[in-house]
Each structure stands twice: as structure tokens, then as C-alpha cells.
Image 1 (cartoon, helix red, strand yellow):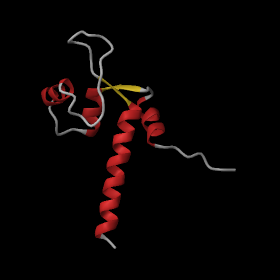
Image 2 (cartoon, one colour):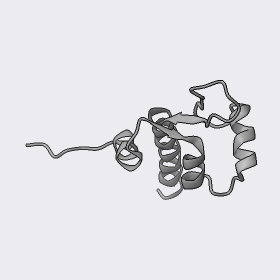
Image 3 (cartoon, one colour):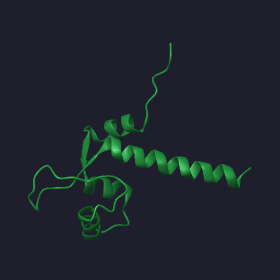
Image 4 (cartoon, one colour):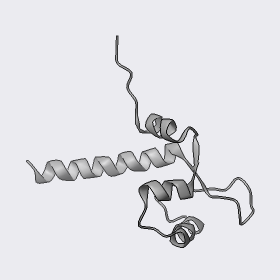
Length: 90
């Protein structure tokens, strides 16, 4: 019997219990160096390495992030860092 294998999307879903997460939650957890104003500026200009969106056109509506997009970014960053580490530690 194969062991259950979880990927990044699975872990994020378990952590956040939703397929979409408010951007400010992601910022708090993964971008603590960004102020709220800077995070909102980046979101408005689509400068994050993942897509952000609003359900409503209201200025007060929170930006959301789909965990698949965010998981892809985390996996890509990990792959690049792992490749660099392997290169430097041969």
C-alpha cells in the first residue's frame, strides 16, 4: 500500500481550509516584511508572483489568492533554491 503523499496545494488547503485565501493572510504568513499599504499597492498593480483577484468590484472587497497559484510559486521558488544549493555544494 502506498503512503499518502501530500503536495504543496494539499498542505495549503489543510492550513487555510479553503481554495481561496485573503491576500492579507498570505502577506502576514509569507511576506511579513511588507506593510499593508505596500501589499495593497502590489496587489492593485498585479506585482505579486501569483494572481490576486476580488469577488466584488468594491474598493473595500479583499483581494483573494487561489492556493494553486500560490503553491505553484512556492514550488518554483523551492526548485530554484534547491538547484542553486546543489550547484554550490557539489
